[in-house]
Length: 294
Image (cartoon, rainbow, N blue to C red; front, side, top):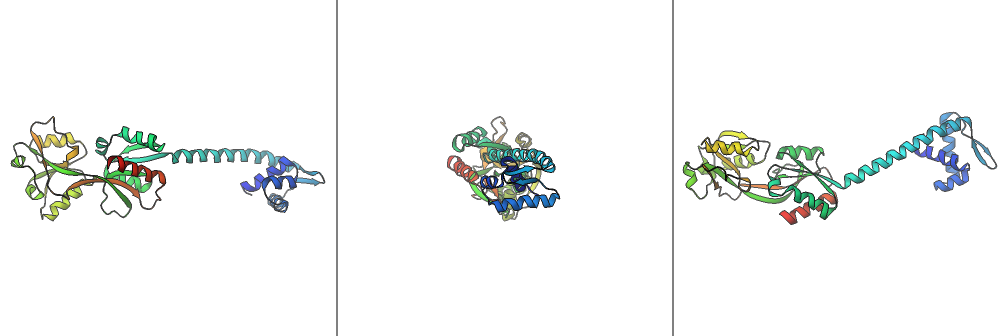
């Protein structure tokens, strides 16, 4: 016995007439009679007394009616709550952002874009590049704005912006006198990088590999940039980072030198799980973000 059969039973209880119940259920009287007979067969008990005026409930029918009526009300409430939840989720977008991106694209602007342009709530989460990728893969995030996952087959990638890299050096270092440098200039230098939960170190290491250079890594840090700047201030190494996110105004002992290599960039875009169908809301969000910030 399933919910549909119980609803048929309740309709007969309500109308006390098989013909009228069948009409309201939009089925034939024969189909309704078969359903009632099937329930009686499963229960091993009669549900109705039939007479020329219609039907009346047996004692067992009365018992089943009281239980079925309560159950159907609970089921309808459950169905309504699920429907409301689905509707609310469809008007909400969970978006991950790699640290630094929200310094370029303000969270307030993202929230207002969602409300004003799309009529949806944007839930903002900040994770490192590779954690964003994990969250998108497992479905915790609908999409993420993060570094290019670089040929990862699990994601569809939609580019948004590119930013050049810089070397942060101590003012006493000979490289500080140059207008720009290449990776060959960094041979035999001690380097400071952000850690491997970000994609940027991969870009840097690939460029060293092209130059046949085995870099010397002094330290790999999380996104605590102040610690990186302090290491450079103490002349412990050269920090390779993203030019647009580098703020050394309060550090008089250090300077930024552009890395003049066209492919040495921080490329940022949207990642979407390739195994999940992208809905219209996600497509609209990407289109609006590219239009406004691309």
